[in-house]
Image (tube, rainbow, N blue to C red; front, side, top):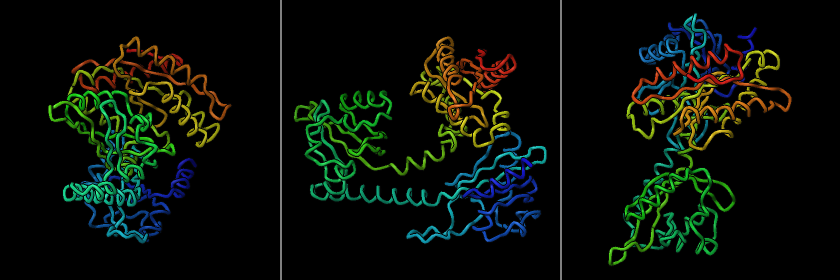
Amino acid sequence: MELQCQDILLDSLENGHMIVDDKFIVSFWNRWLSINTQISKEEIIGRSLEEIYPDLNYKVLGRKIKTALALGTPSFYDTNSSTKFISINRNKVTTSSLTFMQQQVTISPYIVSENKVMISIYDISELYETKLSLKKEIEKVNKLNDKLESDQEIIDKNIMMMKTSLNGVIIDVSTLFCEFFEYKKEDIIGQNASIFKSGNVAEATYKELWETIKSKKPWSGEVKNKTASGGAKWVQSRITPILDENGALFEFHAVYHDITNEKLLEELYITDSLTKLYNRAYFDKVIGSIAKHQRKADTDFVLAITDVDHFKSINDTYGHQVGDEALISVANTLKNSLRENDIIARWGGEEFVIMLKNVTLDEAKMIIEKVRKSVENSKVNNTISVTASFGLTKYNLGEDTHRTFKRVDDALYEAKKSGRNRIVVK
């Protein structure tokens, strides 16, 4: 009955889901796939994908299926690689030459005992077109900048520019800059550039920016700035110090490119769709980078794993929708209770993983204790109480991160075993 309910749910989703085994035999094919491939369930269920799609690279697919089953975690098709999944014609009329659907494909373990995985297909064609369009626009602006540097009128209309004094007071801005950030030029001139701060950029970024340009070096980086209407847009910034005839700092010139859509595309790849926290793939990337480079500033962290207590009974008693609301509630509590530079990700199911940076184990325990109480004091739908158990451990410089995860996982297991709603430190 539970699998039947899951099939109904998957059938209603606006993306593709199929279930296959390691022999590529199809046992589920949802409505989205039937519509977009023009292949009905009746035609494909019980048959091998190889019969329907002989051109698919089954060596790659088989390896990804085995990886997902062996590790118990999703594996992915890289949308930027030449290795594509099944070809699906686009049924939407567009001005681009993209005739085939651009896909994000995830292969997740489904019934491991039967060697079955779920292959999920997400149509990211529009985001991909936006990225291509953005790339073309940036290339066009760069060419304009090179060719027409001396033509101030054209630059004013086609380049986002800002000039400031040494203390950040705005001296001049281009017309395109005003249009992009929804300001009138007269309302900007004389203001401090800090009026564009969105509150979503770490102060450490601004500190690095000022230290760099005051040392007479140009600074480049990505910044999320605020518009006049209160919205926010991402820009790629390059700020260049201008020197007078004696070599002293005179003012700063900044040039910006709009990368808002590119950042939205990036966010899609690294964000858990339910909780809006980072996903496991992103957290694995962060840990992998730490393990590889072993920079001292990055390796001073405490790892925490938390598990929502009795989550199955919440699902069984109130239904999966309330279960999802419980996960969202816990995710929001974690996000609101932790510091800006801590990294929080959904680890899978009802588990979350947290990286607490630049803290001792005792300090981390105090922080997580506040988090635990916040979860305990929150209510799902203002009625349902939820608690969580936590495992905690300090990363040891130079150790294999698998050992760190084993230690923190053991701590979580002990917290669950000894009564739940508590913290165990290893």
